[in-house]
Picture 1 (cartoon, rainbow, N blue to C red):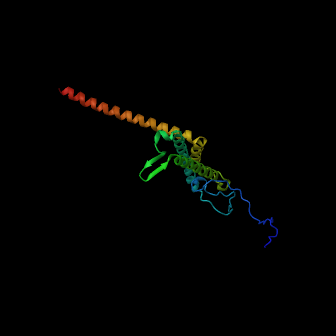
Picture 2 (cartoon, one colour):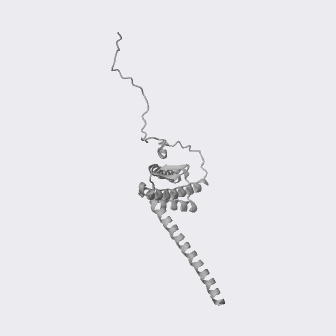
Picture 3 (cartoon, rainbow, N blue to C red):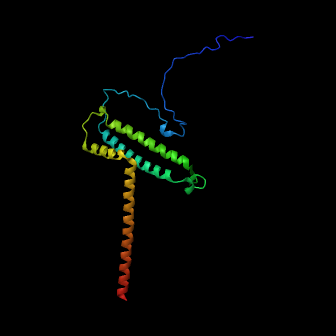
Length: 193
């Protein structure tokens, strides 16, 4: 017979305590899969290429434009009832078939990803380590970005509405122009008779 000594003894091991947000299954939650450090290790002697600030400002503006359109698409798509557009809860055709609930999740991931990217680039552009005089063109990109940042979805819907109005105007105009041409041809034909 074997006796176990110190049956209730607890082994303790020193370790690191890290607070990591529970992200569910990372394979499906790709927008949250990146581990974010809490600090940056900045080399004081490193010289930043100041020409890149304009490019960063353009990236910020484009990312925010994309965020606005993604939010608009997600909002509209989320309001559509699955049963109204699909008998089996899926959309697509050969090669590209997705479940509607998965598509909603993907749109939310896109929105979260673009939001995180935009916030990071905005913080970088406005960080002290760039320490340069702001140029007018860069200021314009940043101002455009800030205007969109206030409400990206409303900005995108406004742009889309203006685009729809422009298309309606052009389609009406082209119909009117063709109607006028037809009327002119008919009038010339009638004059000859």
